[in-house]
Image (cartoon, rainbow, N blue to C red; front, side, top):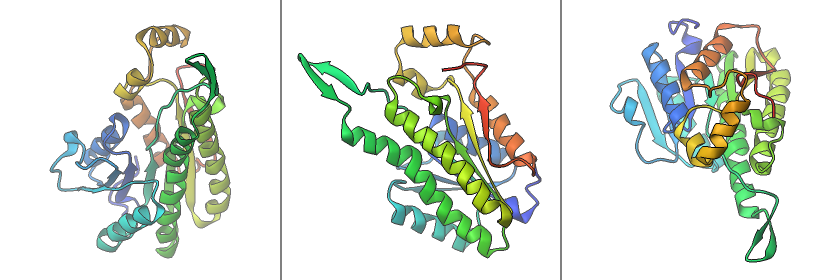
Length: 252
């Protein structure tokens, strides 16, 4: 990983910092000597990083663009620009477009659709827009890493989640082309199924066993392996505008 002594890479923002993946990212970068700015709707910082002097945690509803921008402005005003942005927050959500309820055919709930897209897609736009403004104002340079999903390819029963992650990948490519001349790299990392509590909550044990059997490596990925992928993106200054798949060979 690029040295934390580089003033352009001292500060890392992690959204969804209180979840399994976000808290691991925070711990990883704190261990490398970076200052981590964690945003999450939760009221308390992640337990594994609680009390760490280089963690700045703010409870923030990331679907509120004004609150998101204000939190970022406050951090930048105190510490300087954020140079690594990890848009990690998201909701794993399962619901068919049509299903029967008490003998009636019911469509996908619109409020669930809007919530999933707001959290998993719009938040990344709000955070990135607020951060790159400061990157450019301070001379350019920076990295935006969007945590996408294999479901971006279109997973049955996950229309909202698939649409959000597909949109995130398209946003990544568009922003990489737009911001590349300013020295800002933008990449998506699309993991397959990771061994996390959110994955286990989203699916039954039978479904998880069936999926595991369909993965060529016959196991789920780990948050440590996802952190290695983030490290690769940060380390390689010519890597931008693409989707890095980390799925154990699984196709959906």
